[in-house]
Length: 278
DNA sequence: TTCCAGGAGGGGG
DNA sequence: CCCCCTCATGGA
Image (cartoon, rainbow, N blue to C red):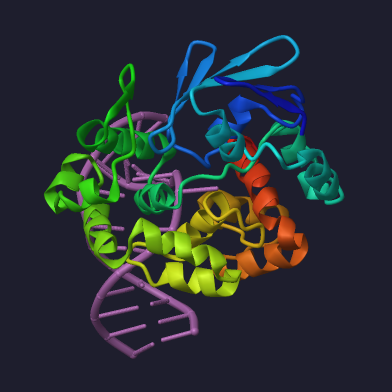
């Protein structure tokens, strides 16, 4: 995709391939705020502000290289969308979510975030993660705190996570922190998708859906299809009535192949905002 | 008041 | 293997 990278900014010129509203609001990421027309994004300990100009979007940040990778700017999404458009079910979701991109997010942050996401809603997930940041992170901008380090998270107990609002997921967090380190997660990069999924599923608080989300939004694997309540509803509406999520996953994977992850995100975003009206 | 949210762990059959 | 139950919390 066409973009210009400067010392403290990135300009992104192809708006049909890059829409910050849809990229951030589509449910793949929880570390952002909307401040008027400006989006503030704060993955890990990094910070950026995104603003729309007439012919481009500008990402203002001290670390353009980090965010070029974070926003997956090297990838051509025109090609992905063109391939997805061959499926008639994708017509509306592609039009609705124009400019969605799958982010490259930190593996450890994804693990913690999506364990919290289980049986939860996005607004409250953001709230809980914000509480954890504010208590254990470093201040990186006005009223914005970094994602805590592994060591910081290990230094607190179950009661702390409950106070942050994590509810019964508090014990999952404490246990998973004893099972895994950020370094080990990084080493998993080399695994094929079958082995990677198996490794993630062995972690406490990580089931099929959370494992798929970590694989998609962290490891950028296209050959997964996270099935949550919205995808399940979508599937029952457009395909057939099925309550077995593993079966739904396999059927959708068979259709979309290596583009499954991308298809899923467009379908999820569309379903979550439109399906209840249908 | 009950139902639901980007589900997962645990027990029993 | 599958089925059933339970797990906090806040908004609708």
